[in-house]
Length: 154
Image (tube, rainbow, N blue to C red; front, side):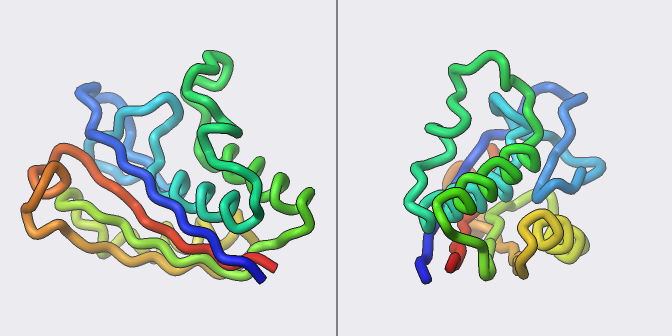
C-alpha cells in the first residue's frame, strides 16, 4: 500500500459564462475557475494524489498546460487517464479524502454529489469535506479556491 497527496489552487475566472466544476459536478450560480482545462481543483488534487501514490509523476507531466490540443479538457477525462496510468504501474485506488478550501460558494449542499461523482469515477470510496480560510489570504478574499487530497492505493 502507498499513499499520495495532492493540492491544487485556481483563481476565479473573469468569464461570466465559465462553469464552476468541482469533482465533475457543475455548481450552478457560482463563478468558474481560470485554467487550461476546466480548472476542477477537486479533481486535480485527486489526480495528483493518485499519481504520487503510484509513483507516476504529477498532473503537469501527464497534462502539460503548454499542450494546446488539450485546452478545455474535462478533468474527469484526466482522472480516467490517471487511474489507467496507476493501473499500468500495478496499483488500484483504495480510497481518497478531499478537503475543498473556499469562502464562496458555500458547498455544504454539494459535498455528497461531488463525493458520489468521484467515487463512481475512481471505483473506490471518496470522502469530501469543505472549509473556509476565515477570510484570510487570497482564498479568504474570494479570489479563488483550492483543494487538498490524500489517496491510498494498493
